[in-house]
Every structure is written in C-alpha cells, then in structure tokens.
Image (cartoon, rainbow, N blue to C red; front, side, top):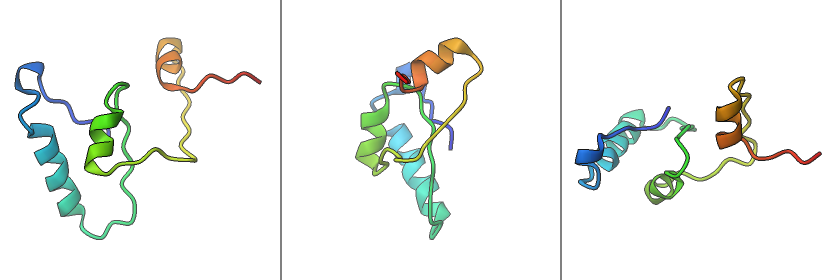
Length: 75
C-alpha cells in the first residue's frame, strides 16, 4: 500500500482511518500488509496498528527523496 491521501480541507474527519480500516478488513487473512507513507505520518499509521519494519529497505535514485526517506548511513 502506498500512503493514503486526503485533501487538507477534509483531513481530521476520520476519512483516511475509515478507508484504511475498510481496506484492512477486505484483505481478511492476508499475512502481511506493507505500507509506504510520506514522512510525518508515522504516528497516524501507528494508531491504526502499523509498526515499523526491522528489515525494510529501499533504493531512491532521486537524491532529494533519498535524503528525506532513507536513514543516514555513516559507514
């Protein structure tokens, strides 16, 4: 799943929560639901039950996106 977007005018009304809960319900017994979200929305998704992955990895070719979404690598 790649983020859930609700126009700013309609945010805070439970629309995204309702959409996600409905999608999760429809997925039934699926063993894993992975979500990629924009930065700053982690707490919202945590309230619904999502947790951070231990093994989540990504490769961004766009340097600005890499800076925003990837953990810094100090090796």
